[in-house]
Image 1 (spheres, rainbow, N blue to C red):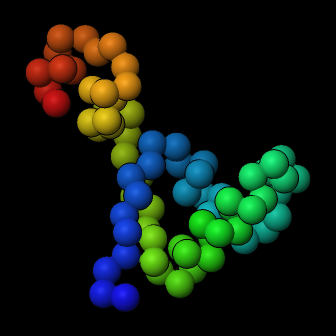
Image 2: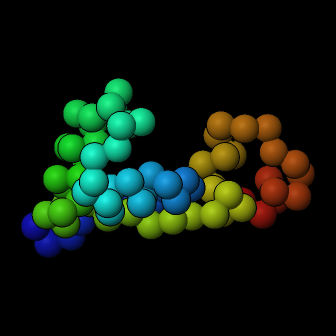
Amino acid sequence: MDASVVIYCEHINNILLVNNSVYHVRTKHIEVHYHFITQKFLIREINFIHVSTEGQVVDIFTKALSIDKLRKF
């Protein structure tokens, strides 16, 4: 594969979970999804990049924004 899919993620804990291969009891309900994503991450088919809350452009579609933030985006 020439390039990996980049996933921009606001929640740093999600990125840390994929980077840490230790099984977490609190993530049992997402076990299948977790293993799939971890596998894709390890073979470098996907890559995660942290984006701060202030940089979430998708908020324009999902939240009511202040006029300043709306102008910024």
